[in-house]
Image (tube, rainbow, N blue to C red):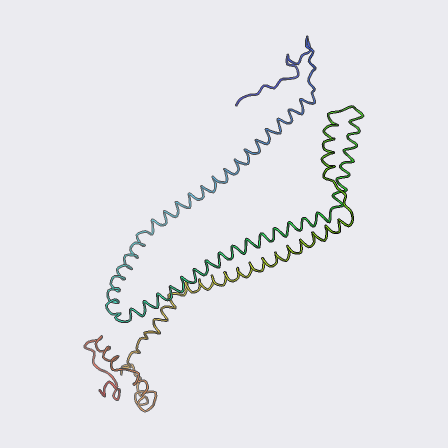
Length: 334
């Protein structure tokens, strides 16, 4: 670190032997040293602030490094299991997709149309949400600008209402300057008089005492501007609130539709292609129930719901199973 040599009070340059130079004023030297100390303390404070912020960053980074290491270690421990599960699911998909695509037949096209229409609705809702988001941003910006204009008009109105206090303060300041100029004049301090006179002139130019009528006009004008700004700010705030509500409502609706996509589509597919009810067999009929079912209309309705096509499909899917339908069923009659 470089060292700065400060001239001392007793350096040869300041000794009075054979020199006509005046000795330095100790008070000026004290003021200089205090100023240097203040500058050094300011730099030290700045460095301390930087060191504190750097230490906080180091602490945060150390915690983050430990978190990263823990995350990588945990993932490595479960990686083999994740891969095995994914391979099993891929195998399941490969097997089932072949079977399903072979059996879907003419049901595929209506289901594809259903999915496409549903996803199109989601895309349209996303586009609408983006439009509402843009409108919300514009409304928010306009509301913020209107609020800022209202604040500016409020400050202007406050300045007019405080006009007398402001003028009184300026007059008091000039009266104080007048006293200082007079005192400097008494001591023939021309340099101080010049500076104080410049300040006096600056304050004098910006000070004006208006009439009572003019103050009344200024107050009414400022109040009118303030009320107009308030009304505009209220309107812009209400418009922003409405757009914000529309955005929130549409966003919630879209999220709900996306979350329920699978269940909604599955219910629609099941309603479009209902699965036929399984035929009732003799092995599942309780003792004594067949007679009552044959004698009642409910039994006849249950027998009528079993179609020949459904019975044939059941027999084809279970080859070698004997026909155990109860006497009197439509299958036995055929």
